[in-house]
Length: 417
Image (cartoon, rainbow, N blue to C red; front, side, top):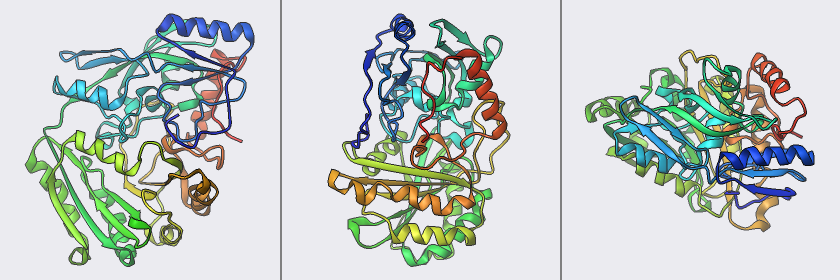
């Protein structure tokens, strides 16, 4: 488990699969022993949903083969492939895929839960680029699922996350052209300007070019002074396009009161990925929660002030990301998103501080959940705070498909208490 705060849950058996035959054999063994199964591809689940008492933990991190076809714009990957490694290989062929923002996240869990990554405002959540899967079902059968064959399994795999009822052994992906220019603008403001900055950010949201991931960060550097960071990493086809997209950040009404300003800095995708390490240091202990919302600034500001007033020291932070309005999505399990994404990340090093910080994200999100349309599974906290992450109709359909493919509930579903 990547999170240093490992939960007190332990499987009875761990199977480290080296190939598809091992996965088939493991599921057969689980059937013989009447064991429930959970699956781990990278261990980056904040909540450790793959760690369950009394279960078989099927570790597919060694299924990490990659094949690419630049002519057809396709790739096939094992679930254990790390997104940052995959992107580095794609770059050699001038290809791109919307991998996760955090370095080291494996593709298995990332793609199943939707995939909130680089250029996802253009290409959609990464699961939209999944054309087919190879999957071992609860009865131990290895199936290929695409739009023509076993399409209900593909539908479910695109968004079910840790509630998926099978073991994906290979994802078949559509890849995209590599963006030619990367750029970022970063501004730091004193916290007392929160009302002006957040009001402006909500107002311009629909006009922000979809190549930009416009984000606001609330942090306490050094554990004392609270600051607001405004940033806009952009990936575009040219430097001129990137500069034109970033120009909107200069419309901030309190731009002249910025503590620091670094506009239009050249930025490589690898640099953007590496920067996540500063926010999510390996070995730290983490607790997270999140919400989608379309509420206006005046309704959200009281909750944001409360977040800032109780914010733990860095690297803990609050991120607000301008996401929508989104274009129409294809029919898939993934079905819940909104204009603004708010995520809270508590991060600390000492286990003695667990009681002090672990409840902070859930407490703050619970206070604002009347303004939420739901959550996304990447930063889920379902064990502490259940919240909707699929539309009601899609949840019903998903459970109908589950009853067909996993009638005996061989696979653990979402960890909701």
